[in-house]
Every structure is written in C-alpha cells, then in structure tokens.
Length: 371
Image 1 (cartoon, rainbow, N blue to C red):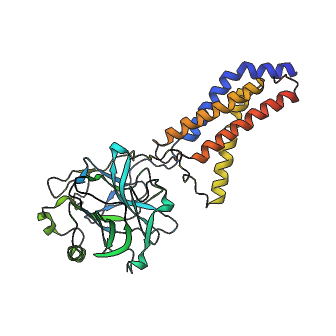
Image 2: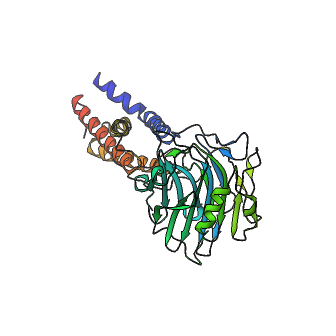
Image 3: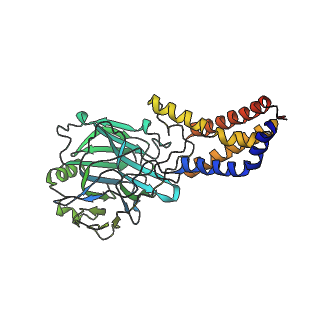
C-alpha cells in the first residue's frame, strides 16, 4: 500500500504540477474588477459625459506645455458616493516613462491631488486632500468649476475660482521642461476606485489664468464652457463634449487632440511593482483572507515538487514558488484590476516553504525515505 501511494504521486507528478501551475496563474492573473466594457455615457440632455463604473477617455496625442506654466480647468458635477474613496477624475499620463505627472481625484466628501514628485510611490494613502466644507461647497451635486494651476512654485487647486489650501510644492512646471502628457479623464488602471460623476468641459492652457479669469469662467459656465474661451491664444485644448454620441470628441481649438472613448479600459497600466500598499491593511478581514489565500494557494504545488525528494526537493519547491510568484506579480502590473504586492510575494513563498516542509514530513510518516 505504501509503495503504491508513493508510485502514484511520482507517476502523475508532471501532470499534477502542470495543472497546479495553470490553476495558480488563472487565480492570480484573472482581472478582479470586471466588467471590462467602458461605461462612459453621453448625458441626456447634453452636453457632457456621465461616468459610471469603468469609464475612461484618453487623448490621441499628448497635451504639453513648455512655457513653465499650465492651467487645467474642469467643469463637472462631482459624484460624492459614500464608502468609495480615492476616485480619479482627470490626470496627465506620460507613456514614455509610465507615470502620471498630475492626478485630480475625489473621495466621498472632498478632493484629492497627487503629483509625480509629491507622491512618486503612488500610494493613495499619501495623497493630499481637502474636504468640500473647506472649499465652500454647500450642494456637492451642483455644477462645479475646478482648476489646477501649475507653476515653478508648485500645483494649486482652485474651486469655483478661489484658490484652496490644497497645494503640491514639488509638482512644478519649469520653462523648457515639458509638463503634461496624454489627457486621461475618468478611471485609470492605477486607480483604486471609479469616479461616478459628470463632466461638461475641460480646458488646458500653457499659462496660469488669473484669479479674476477663473472666477469669470466659473460664473459664466452653464452646461458647458463659455464660447468666448475659443479665442484664447494660450489654449492647448478645449472640450465641450457636445457630440452627443459616438466614441470620439473633438477639441474646439485646432491644436488640441481628439479624445477617444475606448471600448475597454486597457491603459495606462499600474506601474507600481511589488508595492507595499496594494493590500489595505485597515480592512482586517480582507487583509487576512488575502494573506491566508496566498499562503495556501502555493502549498499544493510545492508539496508535489518536494514529494520524496528530501531537503533538495524542499529547496526546489521554495525557489519554484518564489519564481512563479515573482512572474505573477510582474504580470499583474499589466492587467486591469490587479495589484502587484510585496505582501503577496512573501506569502506565496511562505506557502511554498510550508508545502515543501509538509511533503518532507509526510515522507517520514509513510516511511518513504525523504532523503
């Protein structure tokens, strides 16, 4: 009986190992945040776009200022959703270096701001934020004018024309140093939650608008940015979202690139590799489940690899578990809804060690000569 049990595992080991590897890869590489379909919708009546779930627009070409100054204006109806935090509204994405130079977002009762220098790790717990009570918003569901001014002194958020205390001193623009990138509106694969609001207009300038101009733009805004803006020579792009349908919206100024609504959210991908914030330790039950599942998930594979191979088999199992986990964490940086986590790598390797140790111990139990 003992001999048959030993031979059966050895005989079918290659197939069982292959099946385990496939199951592990399916488990760790399957996107965790379906649906994939872009849920951006045209507002009825228009103009504007409504964002719900996975929603995204991306410029076909970068929007860059090299003057040492930049202003980004957004006319929107905020989507204050209780229980959903760190939602991304609009950002600049730089594909060449796989980073976003500036991100404007929202949490349930306020706005967040992140820059390439002030929060380079991308950890959302380090985002700067400000509550809506601090910026004077009485009705959070009303049309709101937000503006980001970028100068050598840093980036500042303005709400309805008034500057706020939300300021990033390190995320600054310098003359001759291009600032901007592909304009991304809505969800990003590097985000944590999806913004649920509506946008009526976006404008980008290669200068800093005065406070008087910002107040005027905020007051004169109806359902879309005022037509008078079209004649501003400093405009890099201006979008009113007046098409009412289709997967493309055009800029009101010629040098602004078109924005497209991709059918599926595929970029930009999460660039953070083996981050320490991919798991929310504050959610004890979710964190515990994640740790336990990552340990247990790698134990069967390691058990099979180490079975009746002694100490050498245990070493092989641990190294194989580490290599497989490292590959999975690298691949997860390119997959929508997945997070590359250092915690997962450690737990997977620990699971491989435990699985190999169990194989070694069971070999003694069944007198199968583990050496």
